[in-house]
Length: 209
Ligand code: TMP
Image: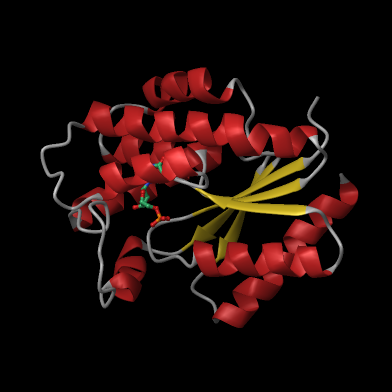
């Protein structure tokens, strides 16, 4: 049975998800909540190995459907090994990216289609969608500007501006579909303001659940 609370952070590359989600998880832990932090693709060994394949800049020949299946495969393992048991044990799970990333990046960015991508992910996650998702809203241009100086850009970071624009559009579609459980946070604000807003919103969710 699902007793815990499943919270995910989403957003374009460079939107600050990792900084914000780790901050929120640390603060909740300090307050005494039983928190599990994770990320996708990855979070556990097998999924991290798949991450290395899917994000390796050398893999320029990767087919879009192969990419979609690899993300779904890594999600399946992560879900079974870490997410599902944590939720069954009543924990607060904070995850940096989950299925909405696949809907936006592979469904829209790669043009495979959101419904098609949802179907393969449904097989992986058996309908266990997040209870609440926080979308860190930042224009793709601003996001890419922030990661421009990163030394190790992964295969997806290196995609064209058009691709990142489509991903952003894809997220807008995902927001419409799941508006009942996705909250938008303005990620163009100063980082301390984003941290404070994210923590307040997550606490509201956790306390009212
Ligand atoms: P990260 O930079 O947030 O760690 O994510 C790695 C990249 O993988 C990022 O460009 C987004 C992309 N991604 C997808 O395309 N589909 C997915 O399902 C996930 C989880 C990530």
